[in-house]
Length: 226
Figure 1: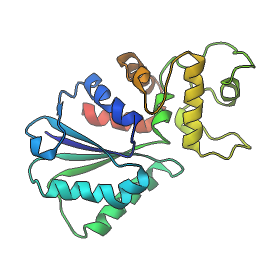
Figure 2 (figure 1 turned 45 degrees about the vertical axis):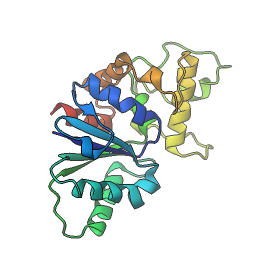
Figure 3 (figure 1 turned 90 degrees about the vertical axis):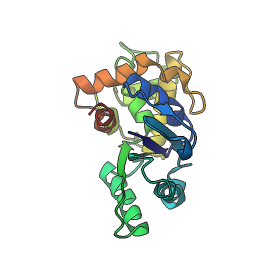
Figure 4 (figure 1 turned 45 degrees about the horizontal axis):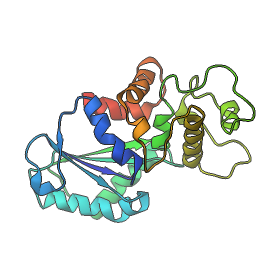
């Protein structure tokens, strides 16, 4: 079995995914080029953002796989829903593939996994991350803290507070950034090492095993454990 991962993400998830695969027991070796694929290998590529992914990189990737028959079993596309509903984002990808390759049958499976709303939404689901007890009103995290309790409520359902003009995905990133900073954990998209640990990943897994939260992470997790 060989995987070709195409991620919308250009930084954080691209760096974290190899660790997550290891924690899930996906004992495959990463290779840089499809010519190097033999058995139990995977390729990891960025789509350079959603616009580039759905207009160019997706089709370049499919063409590469078609030119190397028998090399790849699953093309796994992972991207953010952002302001769309999860099924709308999936339908968008399927529609674009069907338009670009009308009536074409592939000898590999295309799997579309969507983060609702973004990768940081999944990261907010780590069990025990939300502070216990009241926090200082002077804290930069306090406005996020009083807006939404991510421990008791599903992070995927967190909206933007009234009066803010940023997207849900941007708000979730800022929420996570300030929460981790409050807990003295450094995180940035270019340096996500502190959330790439096995303990952090297991905190998200524990969340989906004990609640009905983070359904899109559960879909991602279940795919690799089937």
